[in-house]
Image 1 (tube, rainbow, N blue to C red):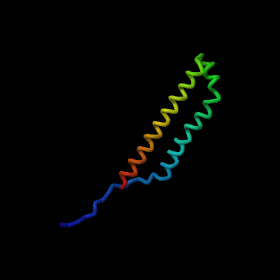
Image 2 (tube, helix red, strand yellow):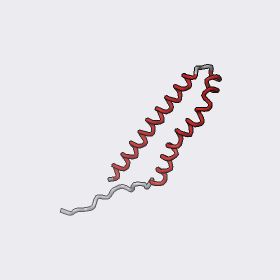
Image 3 (cartoon, helix red, strand yellow):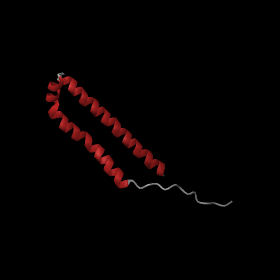
Image 4 (cartoon, rainbow, N blue to C red):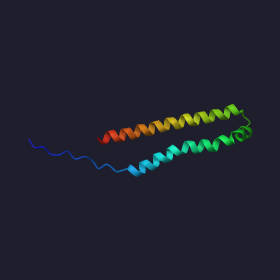
Length: 84
């Protein structure tokens, strides 16, 4: 019985690129919220809606951002586990 080492396909090294992309995604939510909050009264006035309706859009954005971050972390975990 011969034991040949099993060759694995080449795995691209994404260390720095992945770090920069995930960092940019993580910085996007606070930046967007910081720009959005001061504009809330103007947005409500321009669209003719209540302040509560505009606040709901911020809640939906934050929930979507959190779920997107969750899936990014999940993808990162899957990539790390698949390498081992």
